[in-house]
View 1 (cartoon, rainbow over the protein chains, first blue to last red):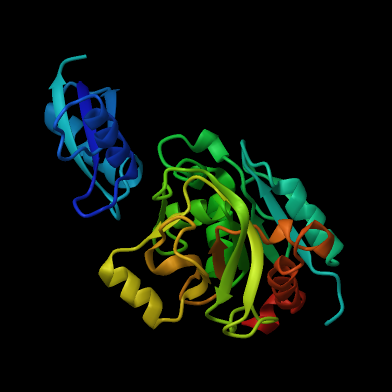
View 2 (tube, rainbow over the protein chains, first blue to last red; view 1 turned 90 degrees about the vertical axis):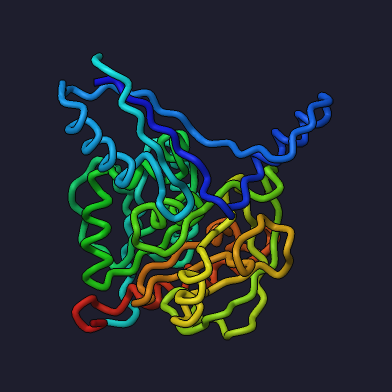
Length: 81
Length: 232
């Protein structure tokens, strides 16, 4: 199965990268009032079962892809590889 | 057994770059050092382990997140669980946090700038094996050089760490990197694992700006001299 994992800085965590992006966008003339920068991981998991894929992806996020102290994650199983 | 030369393992990960300096500084303070490649599954018989600074695995994903899966880290975790002394400097601190051997996590500096200069740190716990040669309230001058040194713990974790006297060093000013509570170094609850962002191995000779880092390394070597079984 193909899947996408989105990792975001948790609410309340200072995100200086997001602040720098917001400030640059404002310099370009866009009225941006908030920007947060996260991470996107595209994966292919060697299973045809979307439930099994999701269960594996959750373990991947908990063990490596996200740090639960500072990041939240969202898993999207997008279909057959 | 006091007076025996303590032996220290310095772990080299792919991307470590302060391993030689750590070995040099520890040797200058009387230790016998052994460099241990990260792929080793066992540690040699040593009194302490140092995880040096650098950019292990290119800092991919999050600093220290990948190094924690190196085979040697399981041996380091067992060594720590048995009461062995483990010191993580800069990237080594990041690895120990990601591995769960120390509380919190290191985030990008609030300035987004790489900070590279001498900083003043205050000793807030002089009763650890790494600060025994210092007194609480002592101010040390030790250089930092990092882009991701903002130690963070949320409110509940921070309170717990403070209550257990695990905060060992704090920066003297607010503009180093934005760490929670200006924390520069923390230890585990048992006080045998310690991580800090400043580089004591770069401050062991006044000719190079400061000798204050030697207080931390020499404290660790004092404790490492005591045979393990007797220390527990």
